[in-house]
Image (cartoon, rainbow, N blue to C red; front, side, top):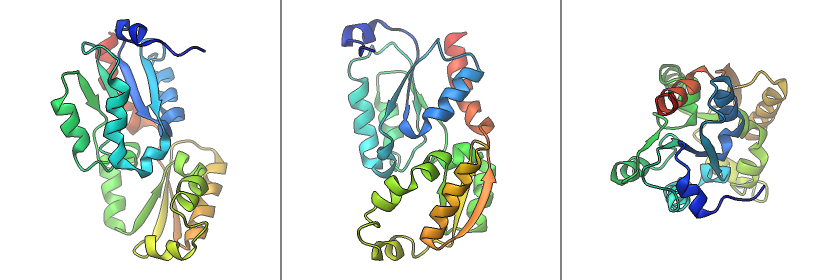
Length: 212
């Protein structure tokens, strides 16, 4: 499929959903379930930005350069480690931009109250979503250089006590991936199923008024 030209993108007045590549399956499911798939445009930025939060805002800005300023944009990101820079960018933009509330994907999948409970139970928790469990080896084990330098595991994870899988699907393979990750890290494993309900709320609230 051909990529739309800049002029075609600028003439499109549908809301643009620009999201983290780690949310492809979950976002597609929410849009399908709420009849929003055909009335919004969806684009994704590379999932490895999950490990490079300082690159998130520049990547978003680069993507939005060619679109019209009168077109609403919904970002499939929480703060995601930008330390407030994403909100500063949104507030300073001439575009109508909103994002998912919260600090990170773990919070918007679990819901703020549930995530706060988990955080208070054990500060030293390393969280996995379905995507991160599935791609743990590529994004964490290799991405952090642990595969080549095993000693880095104890440096990076010295203060962690457990791995918590926040699962969106009921696929048993995801649990197996997460258990394997916990075993590699030599941490306790805990599984909490979140489903998509908490994530669906901000997405549908943000987009439904635009397409009503």
